[in-house]
Length: 322
Image (cartoon, rainbow, N blue to C red; front, side, top):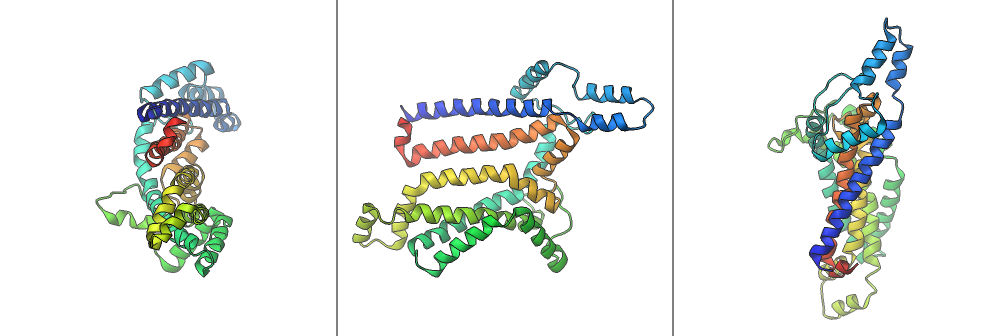
């Protein structure tokens, strides 16, 4: 199979996966009871039934499930993600506008964390694999276990306490005014980025060290060393062969970051990003907003896997034949 054919097949799979994830997300949200209706039923309003019916009508809960699904599927396909309905069905801003405001806030600390963790893992993990009996190699293992063993919410709380109370490094709140042209708006996000970097680098260090170490006994490494190659050149050959499994592991880490850690960090640091928006949407049972934030995470994961397939064909042309 040609490279174009392989990528076309992967693209079709990615699109089908996106619709499958969207369908599952819709089914989960649509079949869950709305606690806000229960709260209204227990309230002492003069017209309980009228208030409940108004909320159900505003949230489109009176239509059959299959009709709601088909209507929503058409809207999503045509890039109409609807409007936020809030806690009790009030008209809100478009979901895409809310996502456009919050995604840059999340990227302000996620992107630096991903880049920094990748750089640290690649450099330190490679050195530890090249010198397996050094003190640094032992330290990498210890740091990896400690980093993976400390819950992210606990580390975030400790760092937040030290940063705000002891050193005054960051303000007590964050805003959505993030701008690449104004680096000053990005400074407060260095602390949550450092927390996220610690968690990501802990696992990636062990990945790089383990994957690189298994190649140092191969014949091609012996041949390269016999030609008098430097350690840097040896590492380049080793990492080229270890690139495929490392890429898979790094993409998996990125998806897990969005699925779990973003919500934790933004809750602890009170960051008005994508995770905070998703948590508020779940609390309000705001279906358009829940599905919007879910689709962003799903699309990032699916796009990451498709990008991984593209890079596979570049690193190893044999992948095209699979």
